[in-house]
Length: 464
Image 1 (spheres, one colour):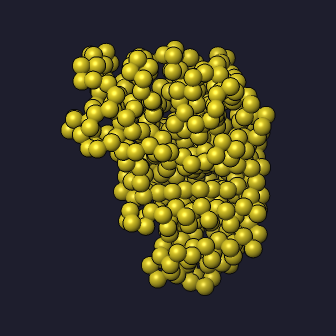
Image 2 (cartoon, one colour):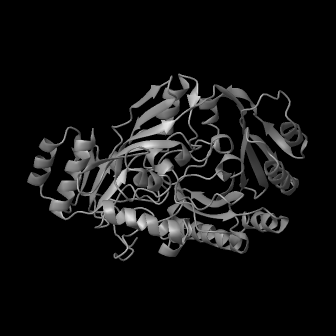
Image 3 (cartoon, helix red, strand yellow):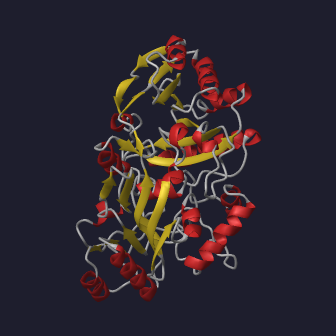
């Protein structure tokens, strides 16, 4: 995004006495560059992102969020918002500005009789699932437990229960939002229904969500886990995965990950999540009979256990992700992706296939524009050595470009990098929905204060 990190220990923005006034004005914690907790507080999921904010405000309630906005406006500071800190673009932290950090706001309350959960804005899916599963209930979340509930929801939300219950945003019933002016507004079917529509996929463009309310569904156990295949049969298994998903019932969500080992041998991980009653489903027999199966960990287990199947370390690896939505997975595209996995002569990361069959095809009340796609295909470059940054970033870009002839629409907000052009953001929604989102932006954030995201600028404001 063109910003440069400050030298360690250099304070930008507010003077020390201003920070003292801020500390006395909030119930939460204010962290500056000289504090011992500063480096841990500015760390995010993506180790490629190394930015030094002038101040981090760890809020405890909506009042703290409003105070943080006021302080940023008075001091002329740009603002970033941190929920789970999991966005691969690193939007949750910035150089020389103020971070509104919700990581101390993680309470999740469950009304088991009404099948509704109320989550604070900094809760992660580990927090959420732990609370709801105590009642035998779920809402469809992501696949990595440390992901923030709010961030995933506002970007759409694809995960282990997508086929059964839709995108995460489809299950959002309401939210309490603090706008950059400091006002507290409530989105809901009986309150501000336009804002609720925008929050169901329009990103963090309108305010900071301090509370979210979700519809819950009964679920205690699933049949899931992972099946790992290696060797020359990987191509055939990937085609089998495609065919199974194309005909799959709504009680089966299923994703796949294509990768190579250090010797550049291809392997494929298939991750089913089945909630049906068949004790010997045909799809599982077909997968178990496929060639090259080297590890079978599919079993009946809790949904919380399923949420650990694809866990990823937090803040240890460098990431650069790009995606494309496709209406099908033809053999020619599969062959192209198999060759791309070996293109740089070392494991570049993974190619992730997320199915969108089943419930996402229902008409959702929100701006999401990718429901018509069959798969979300993502090149997720992952590495640790900073010396090869350029190679891995180029691999992700070139791999996604190779998908281009088969792709439809724009990108997936939750996987977009900070360098995505405004045209690709617009394409993620379509012109009509994007125009409606811009109208909401003009109402709630006319100054485009919340622009460190996949930005939807007000109609008269230039994209940044």
